[in-house]
Amino acid sequence: MILIFGGAYQGKLDFAKETFSIAESDIYMCQENTDLDMSAKVLCNLEQMVLGCVKENIEAKDILTSYKDEIKDKIIIVNDISQGIVPIDPVMRAWREMVGRTMLYLAKEADEVYRVFCGIGEQIK
Image (cartoon, rainbow, N blue to C red; front, top):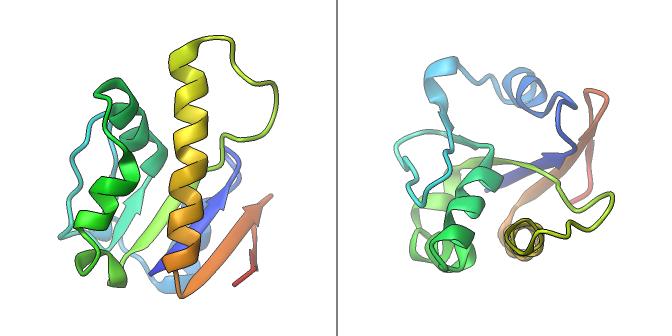
């Protein structure tokens, strides 16, 4: 698995397309629910799926663990929402915390991890 993370609008998807020769048809854009299209090569905006998990009181890591075999060949792109002011809203705070836990799990399981800032990808694992 390859994990790509960074702030919003930092060029993560463009970096993935250029670096790993990704076509538009290979990309699944995650939504605010617990669904994942495991037939796609790339799971993009995984933090949106995590928000769906928070709202349904399900741990996102548990969903990803259930796909452990299928996820091994995926590229996962996540917006890092851990920076800045901690939200007052309990749901948004829980979302931020769960995204952090999910990224920790994914980074541990990943073969490669990239942080993208200003369109420049830096391999950190």
